[in-house]
Length: 86
Image (cartoon, rainbow, N blue to C red; front, side, top):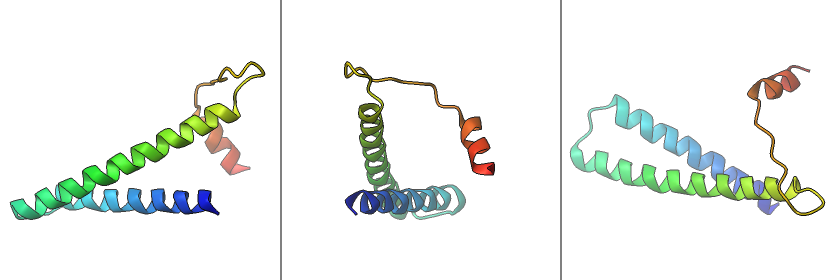
């Protein structure tokens, strides 16, 4: 359940970050409003980055070989797309 909550928190933070970027790029905002949005965007960006690092470490742990050495393979987005089509 905790993993699901963290995932939901990441998704919400990422969506909020996307909205902030759209507002900063698309609207003419007063300087103070822009600064406030920028600060919130930085906070959300740091949170998302931290969560991604946590997930990456967990994946490396799961994929460790018998000696505990991480087994890494390059990510191929094409493989993910092929699997989704099945």
